[in-house]
Amino acid sequence: MIHAASCGVTLTLIQTSPEDRDSALSTTTREALLAAVTTDSPAARAVRGPDPERAVRHAVALRVALPELAADLTAAERGLFAEWLDRLTGQARVIAAAGPPPARR
Image (cartoon, rainbow, N blue to C red):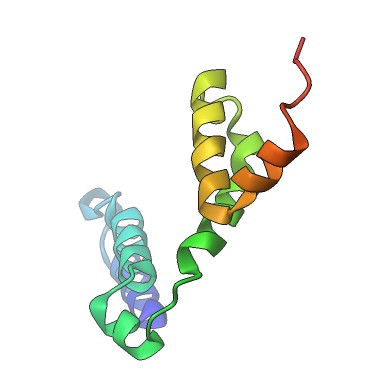
């Protein structure tokens, strides 16, 4: 599907005169393809079957990436998001047992 769409867009853009080309065609097609192949469809879930650990894996990945989001979130937002992710991964119990983190300067 990806190959066919990519070839179709490329050939369409090559064959269309520059003044008639849709400058958004490539971007729109790419986004549509990404949405089509990355969406968790009911058919994909039926083939894959139940996966109770799926949310935990995603929460762990988000928790690891959280420091990279520092510029996009306030300190309060990062703290709340981290707390939620820690709860989902079971880390809240580990963190509570370890005590509060050191104060930031």
